[in-house]
Length: 255
Image (cartoon, rainbow, N blue to C red; front, side, top):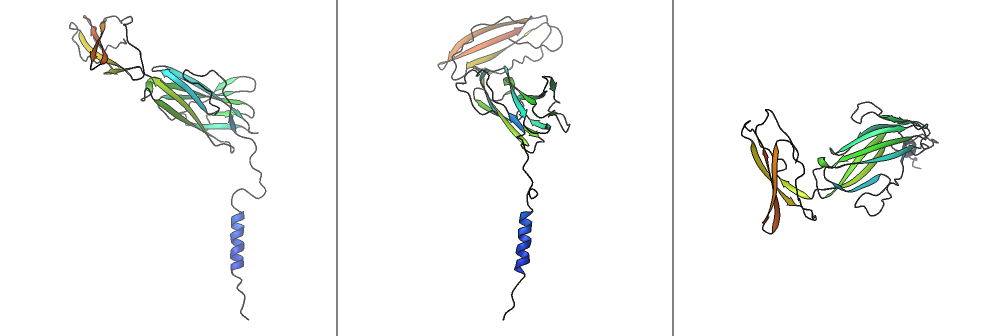
């Protein structure tokens, strides 16, 4: 009779024990609660937004005139039975500024630390209390104009029920005109000589606006606006001049 081979049994048993040991401890219950829960938004719709998006982590700023700043406050509730802290916020774009607040049970509002802080916890929320994430987008700082822009923000927490939260905001910065050059740089100018320069303005596609007049001019500045047709395209020319005598030092103005 050939002897039985018993070696595979301990190996199989060891493999079974190793497999059973992976993950949480035997009999351990999953963490209770849901971490920081993003609450739905029921405020007014932005210009150019026809329907309400049901995703609580998403907000549509719609069509915003270039140069304006828009703000949205996301509200979150701590559904864990223990304190939850926000440890980091990544705004995702240089055009975006984010700030944190805690809304206490008695209604008090406490500012969180700046998101650039190196502290381990930026704000701590007790069970049942609320956190606010304020998101501000400065369209002037957007490199993309007249096109859809989706900005993603990431929030890190210390809750085992949700270590990562993602927020999205959409904006379209309307710039009805292209100005070339973007700034009128006159360079060094003699005190008694003044200086003059011009920019050309072309209407952007999809817009029907026309520059019609100059508003009040800064002191010491004269300007005129004219238009001409070039290859069936209307071009506006803005000429500006600094009138002598001029004070020494840099000069900056907005027309």
